[in-house]
Structures are given as structure tokens and as C-alpha cells.
Length: 303
Image (cartoon, rainbow, N blue to C red; front, top):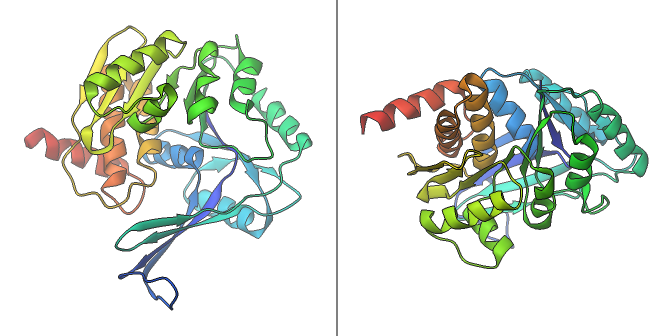
């Protein structure tokens, strides 16, 4: 089974406004409401690709109720821990001449809630996949991802981590199955600016030397690079298409990689599936469907 953890899920309220102006009334031309959060995005896309997951994390209030209801309608199984204080956040994403985001706070997660999460993680067995994705609320320890990996050490669970800075670097000694920084996040870790695939490869190998098994680095319009656990280097240009929405593209890449790997056990095919799934989401208003991924593969094969 594949499990995803989203510590601070949200309702994403996406509004389009022609030529947004501050300090006055603006009227929307389009509105969308989705369940949000990086782990949730991974679950949705994996479901679209035909793989069942269980989404874990924390929800609260009427927004948490609606989030779970939306996921159920999308066919995504969830087992969220209900938090007493606060409410699941609403993230407002404004699409206009520029993209602007306002992210909510989220509920107050208590130590007892975290203990309940560990009890859920005890269900995982050898061969399961766990995806730890996104930021963590300020009320939680900064070592949360590392603590989970230490807790599950030796159980044969493959763990993918998509996080930034210390959240990511602290897990490396516990050999995550997959990590997926983008080139900017990779540069932040080492205090350098990374622009080319050659530069990505150098620093991705450093992350591997520090413990990661597979290092997948996204570069938006400049493609992607994978250093797999066998030491092989895989590179891809960005597929051709029109960018419509960058939200969820990185999560979709993680989902595509996992789907590709589970389908045939090939890192080359996993990388290809990750690249095209991430791009298919970037070229769509919604998260990628299997049909969109396959269509994008076909179009780029012809070009």
C-alpha cells in the first residue's frame, strides 16, 4: 500500500481575476475549489494513474469536513486525525497578470495528535511506500520527518521525502528511497546557484553521498535530472506544452515516479513517467489524469 502524509492540508480556493488591482473591488472570472496539500496532491495523482493510496494527516473544523468530503468524491481513501482546536486552512491562489497566494495557518496540533499518527504508522508493513511531503506547522518539531524515518527504520518501508532545507537534509542518514528537491531548493542546501543540468548532477550526487537512494531534481522549463541508486544518471528536457498552473507539478512528478517504478521496476521508466506526469499537471487547470499524461507522451514522441 502507498501512504501519504500531509501535516497541514488545505482547501485550495483558486480564483481568476482579469488584471487584479489592490485597494479596490475585483470580480472573479473563474473559481475552483480543490483539496490541497502536497501529500494529498500525490494521492490524487496516483489515484488518477490507477494506484490506490491512503492519505494521512490532520484535519479540523468545517473546512476539514469539506476537504475529506471532496477527497471521497475523488475516490481517494483517507484516515485523517481530527484535531480539536482550529480549522483546516484555506489557501487562496489568485491567477491574474501575476500569480499570488495567501496561505492559511491551519489547526493547533497537540502532542497527543502526533502520538495518534505514530500509531497509524505502525500499520505499515514491509514493501509499503510512505510519502512525506511539504512543510510542517510551526507547532510541530522541526525534526518531524527525521523522527518518523528513525521510528520506521528497519521495517522495509520505502520512504519518499519532498521537503526543503533542514526538513530534507536531516532525513538523509536514514536513506530515503526518493527525495525530490527542485534546482533552487538544491542550491539553497549548498549555498550556490544552480542553473544547468550539469550543475544539478554534481549536487544531486552529493545528496546521494549523504544518504539518499534516488535523487530526482525538477527544473521547471529546463527539464529534470535523476541520479538513481545504481549511480546511473538520467536527464530529460521539459516536454513541450503551455504552462497553465505550476501548483502541484512537483507533487505530480513524485506520483508519476512512484507509479512508473511500481509498474515495471525501472528507474529509467519511473523517471520518464515522473517528468511527463509533472508536466501534464503544469499544462492543465487540474492535477494530471492518466489520459493527459499518455497524450502528452504521444505528442512529444511525435515532435
